[in-house]
Length: 210
Image (cartoon, rainbow, N blue to C red; front, side, top):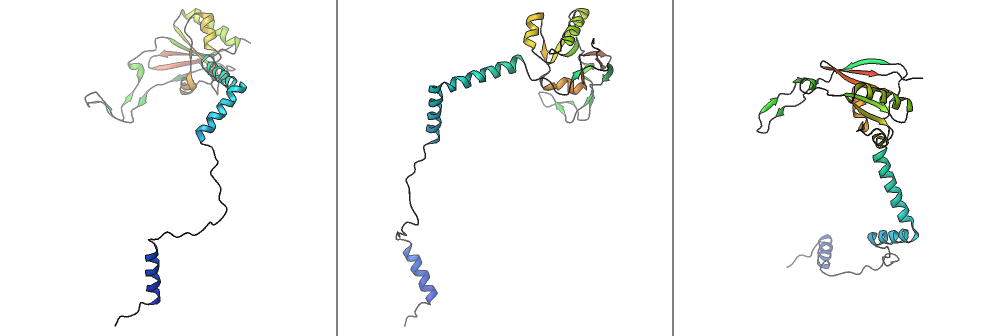
């Protein structure tokens, strides 16, 4: 004599057996067709509209102008101002290695913790002269120094157009990108002349005519 399934077991078997058949549960709410355009198609459409209206050409011209300005007249270095009180100080470029320096074959060249002064290996061949070309007084002062040192000076801008100066002076003019040199040397006033004295760098923040 077969025992009947308990009610809970019977319900479980009924549910399992029904999984092999699709069940139409009906619609739970209103349905709509997908009408959102493809993202790339939408972008292409917008570009065509801007091209027809002339807006795209205007945007391209603005981008070219900004790019040219960034090259010919980089952003001025922050934290600097024209010299108010001249001062002289020294900078020691000695650094300590935080890791081993290995050669091409894996040999140890310099161990971590080694202190080294770059001026022991390479000397500063020319004076470094930092200045802001937007200040006519600084431009005049730098021009005097260039003549005095007879080319043994590397002019480095912290503001203004180096392209304009190169055309006017017919010599290379550099730019302190992101203020890496002035900030590292501790320069806060310009014009500033950097020279080598032994194994240190002497920094003179120069007086300007009133």
